[in-house]
Image (cartoon, rainbow, N blue to C red; front, side, top):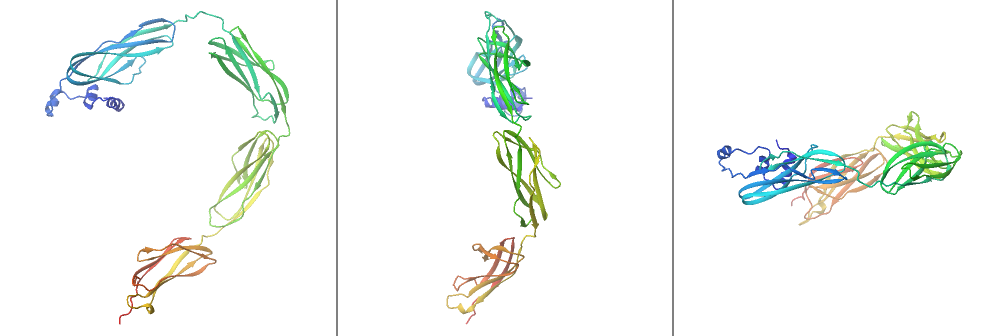
Length: 458
């Protein structure tokens, strides 16, 4: 069965569905086509020659490019014919699907080619697979490549140079302090170079690299005490080679120390849970890496790191999510380069139930004194809202589905709040309908009432 990927590639190349089906042997037979009521189109005849390689058997310098060619012959019955093909390789891989179009009548011959470059010895084969107008695979065409070094052998020369970074170090000698020797190897021509690193007279590492022009190599060590020293890069092969060495100085300061302090957030009283963030300051007296963690009663945080190049101070923070009332205590523990503990930051959390508002009553009152010819009564809407504590009420009125703007009213204490909203006499004032009060903060609450307040008839 043809894969979905191959079908998509054939379609992208312009090969029709019937042609793609033919490439996998799924095209209907003439009898089946006739049964379906469709006359079968005349099939072109397709042949392909076994691929030939040029050169077929290569012996000499590599890399070498080998050209594979094959001839595809198509006998046309008229109209256009799309030919799709791909190359099959001896290592199991396949080329991309390619195609070309032929038209007219008679036999057309097209030569197709593929070029491959080889850098080492290989024996293999290639075949051509025609995918459309129907599937056909050629025999395998074999080839071989034998690489031989025909260069005139000339002595290769290698030269090394070494730099130490930093060449003068002064600071804390921690387990994380590193000094790196950078070696540069240059050669007179492409060659393999064997080298070794020597540290203060002791061979510490060997290496091998193919160098075409220049190449950098590295050696890193961790100083543990103050001293003077040197690092050398020796060329082992080729025999025509010069090494190099570079000196350095290390001064380990013993007074690199760290300390910390903590600031607690202000006390909190209100709804819970609530996030409370502690601030901290970590200070170092010199170049060092500080290991620290946050801690508290029943709590130990993960170990974190700060690096100080020249000492100084850096800020850190720690957030606690409080769900219950009580005190929260936090401090910082310094774990390296020395041991120390900061002051303890304390904050108090008092959890209280959130303030709520409830609309308790709502009524519409009509003032018939404003009734006159062509005018309606004045209508006033009155409501009472009960709150459980100090808050800011946010509410709006709706009359017969029309919403008015939000209103904010500050409430200083728990109790009942009276709200009013009214309209003057107008021939457009509603005398019947529905009034609604909607509270949106501190929580949702609403109430509505129906009214009918016409002017009295004479």
